[in-house]
Image 1 (cartoon, rainbow, N blue to C red):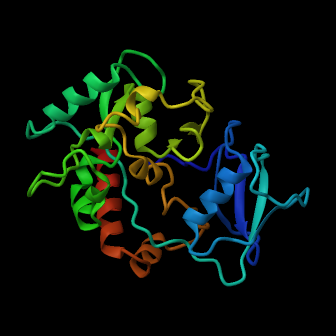
Image 2 (image 1 turned 180 degrees about the horizontal axis):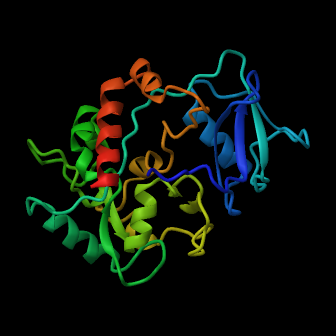
Length: 267
């Protein structure tokens, strides 16, 4: 059965014109600021909301470094709220099938040396943009963010060292589920969106993988797209989820990804 990711959320946000319907939410472990929250809204919605207000206290969220307080937030927009149609893909841990990932694995291990989030030495090489979604990588030209393989011809560049870092196995799993993210625009702050039993929330990504002098440093642009699952919003009770996907943007791709994801849950 799919995991109910809404359990335990202490931050939820709503369309102010439909206050009984939850747009989404997350667990605030203490590292998400008000500015971070507004950035999330800009990513999630097609129009940046002019006002986000906590329902009980009336507090209006501002672009400050104050920590976002747990609560229920109403999102106000000048036009009907629409979720962004930016493509999003499920991350699924990929295993080496062809041998072409050996250089990626060895290069990442040589650069990072240990898990760049926990600092522990039990680790595996992780793709930031998922290897098993290489067709999406090619279709939407994510390779444009890769600068250490400019002379490569007829290669997608998805196995560039800039698209990876070393993570401990369990942290790799959290990252692939969009339950942990790294914000390059906030001093590489690490945010955890479920119960932070590992104590990772608020840590800083190890500088070894992002040294500006290293041509193989992690791509900030790929990190920006790795932390916010665009379609991770709540389907209200009674919603025909398949109809919502079918009638929405990127319907074919989303069906393919849902099917792939669900099959892996039961196999």
